Amino acid sequence: YVIPKSWTIVISQVGLHLNSEVYEDPLAFNPSRWEQMDRASVVGRYYIPFGGGGRPCAGAEFTRAFCAVFLQVFVTKYRWTKVKGGEIIRTPFLKIGGGFDIKVSKIQE
Image 1 (cartoon, rainbow, N blue to C red):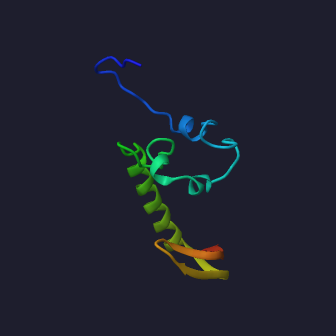
Image 2 (tube, rainbow, N blue to C red):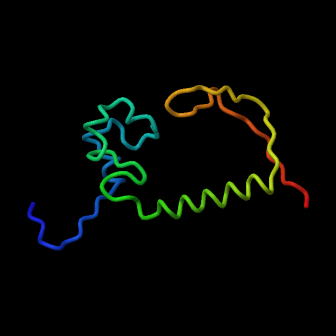
Image 3 (cartoon, rainbow, N blue to C red):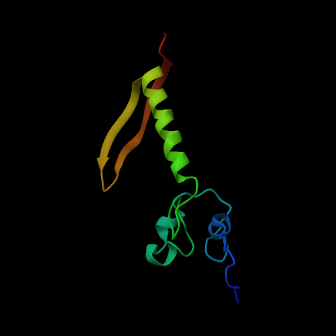
């Protein structure tokens, strides 16, 4: 294709992530589908994670701010107690094996 000078190109992440030529059953919920693929040939070509790629996601900063506000309210206005779980698995990323169930109750003012 010839793209005229000064045109803006918009890539649809949904279109990439639901490509049936790349992914088997692309409409099925399978968040680990990318683990089974060769990462070097997939990332940036068929998979663009949130905030990844050549240009960061326009909503990345908003999401960081939203998460910061949510966490501040959650830890100051609510009490949480462990119900079960919490086994820490050390990998390059921190994981909690078997889940981590908590009971959340609002702090009475």
